[in-house]
Amino acid sequence: MATTSSSEESRLHCCFENWIIQQQNDLRELLQTLKDSPGDDKKFCLVIQKSILHFEQYYEERAALAPANAPFLFAPPWCTSFENSHLWIAGCRPSLAIRLIYTLSGSQIESHLTEYLQGVRRGNLGELTCEQLGLVNDLQCKIYKEEEKLSNKMASMQEDIADDPLALIANEFDSGRVGESNDDVDRALDAHSLALATILKDADKLRLSTLKELLAILTPFQAIDYLIAAKKLHLSMHEWGKRRDQQHGSI
Amino acid sequence: MATTSSSEESRLHCCFENWIIQQQNDLRELLQTLKDSPGDDKKFCLVIQKSILHFEQYYEERAALAPANAPFLFAPPWCTSFENSHLWIAGCRPSLAIRLIYTLSGSQIESHLTEYLQGVRRGNLGELTCEQLGLVNDLQCKIYKEEEKLSNKMASMQEDIADDPLALIANEFDSGRVGESNDDVDRALDAHSLALATILKDADKLRLSTLKELLAILTPFQAIDYLIAAKKLHLSMHEWGKRRDQQHGSI
Image (tube, rainbow over all chains, first blue to last red):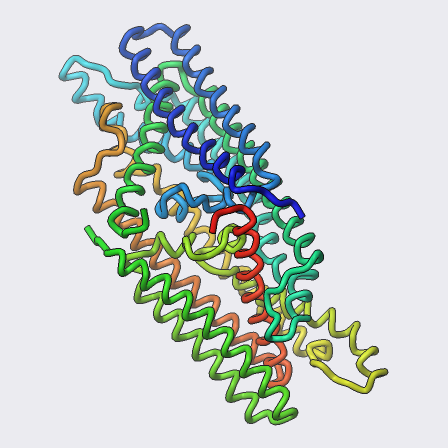
């Protein structure tokens, strides 16, 4: 059986906490670049690539940690109840990234008139061209299909619990020995954990490819605007969730 | 904002722990009835009805607790990582109940020859008639469709995080104030929690109706056999999960 120590759990926790700090740092750098170098597409591209690289590194670290710890990553004790209740295969649903584009785009169309009248410009996701909107729509359709494939795999795994061998091993025990463990149980649970690790890696790959393809559709200015909003949303959800858990007395 | 106290969280935890104890008691009673009153369909029906009643009471209690606490029920801190990693809308996937019938039926067909040779009979889920198998199959198709409807609703809710108002509120904050809270945030999060509570109740209804319809297809003897196996699996998963979490140092 693949056993892990408590230090391994703290490595998982640490990986997540470092990721939150990384997101905060990236957000600051994106905002600073937007302020200090307006219109400098070269500088914009550099910080965008840096953000993507950090996503890649985070997913690589999770992929390395997953085989021995996958179940922990599906409802991490170090995330808030609100975050955990909205998870899809140990992370956010990839199509959420597309929905965010539509939300920002719709909101910025409204604010453009005000900005024009005030003589300021805060972002330009409200100026997506017809071609860009078409590409975002195509990407959304593609992502939905990929999500469905993984959701179906996950559904099978949830059902597999009632299959041979776990259901039959459980049924063999007398009432007084229900839940006893043995090598067969450990082997079966290890197999389930490894299957979870595999689907987690596939879901992370889809999250990453969605982000990359989405950013490739946008201009550097739009991409920075988008990354800033995405990071603010992620970090806010984490903070808002912590506050609510504190009110519920669970932290 | 709907605030809840820590005593409310302990009520949730208590509700689950009582449910586990109830499952253990029901299992003992089912086994005892099978031993003491072989072939007594009337007695079998009484204990089966009692088990169903307990499921109804548990789901009623969850429905009452859900509105103020829904996010906690989607990845409960009092469940094990292994259980939480296989949850579908705050509980087990209803089609898992059907899969268990097929697993037990397949396994018992194999064991019938041995039992016949030994002159003993342990159960008769291996003797499902063609009509029963047809009904189970019809039920499975129906449940898959119902599950899909709820899965699609859940997918929308996971995406809704990136919609107005949360994504736009988050985007309004300066980097130093990311994650600050206000009444708009609280109202939006309350609305998300209530939506979670509604889908949880719908999923629990589907879990309950699946069980009832499944048991109605079986003879009383088969139904007892099935309930025993289902409870053993549930209780074993909880115990096996606890043992693994202890090995990971999280309990």
